[in-house]
Image (tube, rainbow, N blue to C red):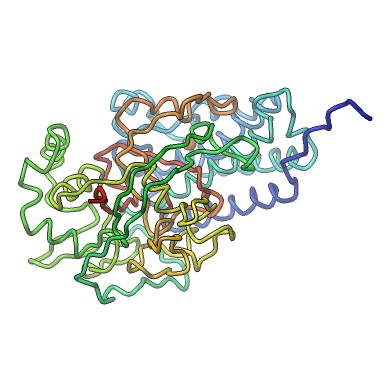
Length: 451
Ligand SMILES: [Fe+2]
């Protein structure tokens, strides 16, 4: 008998990751072309960098994390790789002020850098050793997947930044249509009871092709019975809260949330506009009468206040898992709909649309309990403060990715939005935001303890 342990199977399929890299670059280019050229040095979100930064950041991050850290490559341009190294965590005023240079490079300079980076990276993906067991950054191809998923995540960030631009700064892609804004909305609120059971959060390193550090290891949680909304809270549902004076009732908001609300001066969700007494939705390319059947996009502060108004609460991360992946038989699925790979029939994700669709539009994506739209059409707020699972360890290729945000001031969101790439749709994937950050595509539903 041979006593030598078998060599670890290769995780990275070169042709697949080369294709994924190329697809990413094409999509990123399409996104940048959605803006008029005069928007290039503008900052649609004050505490984020101007547009130019992101066109340089995506390739510079790939060079820094994959070529330099993973492969020991000397890099391509140390000045640009320092300039484009890191984005800004919104809320960190000091770093925003410090990191903005007086003059940004020209667009030609940024594009030349990106093209050179693409050439060198594709050659490395073609023929370098990109997977190595003894090197943390290359273990199971970590550096490759870090680079690929980083770009996909930025594509979503870009889109919600673009969303903030005036309509005159955006070019509508050919064939773009907006979903029905006049779909009927049910006045009946339906809830689904999920019996007590176990939820497996996270994953083991070998059961997924790749995961970020905060996805490991698994964490099993016993979840008592609860009832959860069948659908996300809609604009119609949230309008009732607005009209009932929810934004003026301090009792519905935590002390901190009330302070943040006062600072913002807002009286309604960020994506809404009130014009001559009528409500409108500020979409990516259109301003339309408020689509009552669409999920409302709100902050964690707003979602929590609404839930309190309804004498309910937001789900925990573990409750989300039970509703999305649990089954009456006690097993757990890979996706709410089963184990089949995500496709557009399962939900509104992967850049098929630039705005939401009416809730309940993807019945094929329902969970085993019949709960709808848990993946797609907007991230789902949870009440869980972002942190590592017991046994968490930082990852070699991007050590600051999660740990920098274990500060008690970020909440976990799960699922996906219309601007979430299909590669990020996996059970263990976790995203997180500050509780009053209003720009991203986050929806919610309420839960209550099972009586
Ligand atoms: Fe980044």
